[in-house]
Image (cartoon, rainbow, N blue to C red; front, side, top):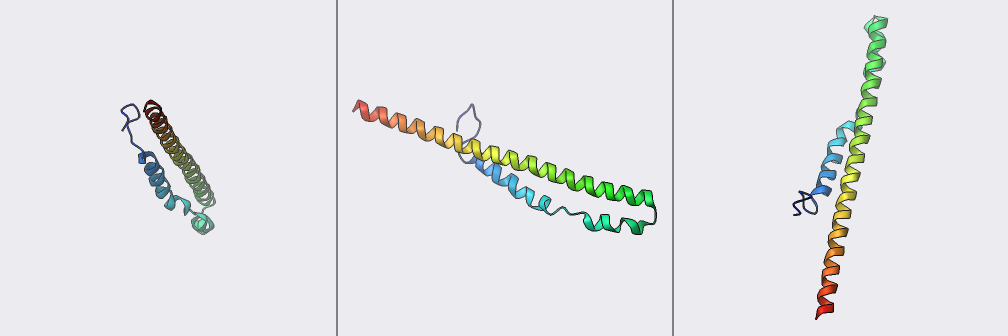
Length: 101
C-alpha cells in the first residue's frame, strides 16, 4: 500500500461497488402514488404542498443518486489508473533487470 495514496489496489474499486450497491433502494424512489392521493386530503393547499414535496423528494433522490454514481465511476477509474500505473512500473523494473543481466 502506498503511504501517499492511503489505499491499495482494489480498495477504490470496492468503494465504487459499495456506493453502487447503496444506490439500489434510491432507484426505487417513486412518490407518484402518495402525490396522486393528494386531492383526497380535502385541503387544496395541503394537497399542493404534498405534490410539491413528492416531486422535490424524487428529484433530490435522483440528483444524489447521479452524484453518487459519478463518484463510483471516478473511484473505478482511479482504481484502473492505479493498477495500470502499478503494472507499468513493474514492467519498467523488469525491463531494467533484464537489460542489466
